[in-house]
Length: 155
Image 1 (cartoon, one colour):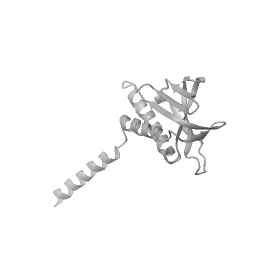
Image 2 (cartoon, one colour):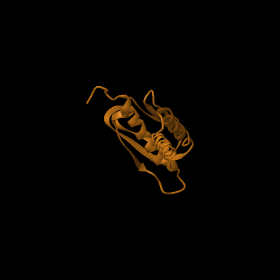
Image 3 (cartoon, one colour):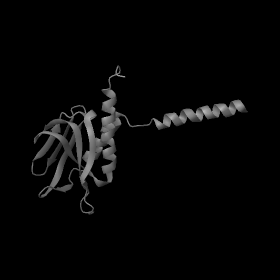
Image 4 (cartoon, one colour):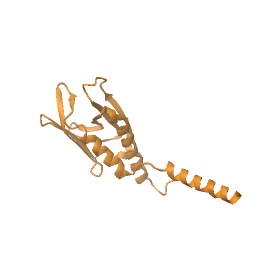
């Protein structure tokens, strides 16, 4: 009976340890962000005037985010280093049900290229219902990048 109980405890411990390591992979995180960006296409935002988001695209491998609007203008940010991501903040998340989109900034500790020149933040647009999850996804990408770029010989 003691052996059976010991085996059950060991099995329970193994399953608990495995379940706690269920963080999303880079591929799962990127897929979630891609789906989230597609959901804002056709939604309205206010930028001095109301504009429709016609395309919102993200590429982890190429490190760029591009948002295109109904008037043909676009904003592209590129060459950022995910391991230097400092924070993701919601800067405009309207409470009105009329607007479904939040504007968020990704703030970095290093500079990167943008249509506006060199900067240390990008702006993204996501559905209000996904804002917190998208924030967590970007922070997860940062953690993955830090792990990938970790010096294995550093103390």
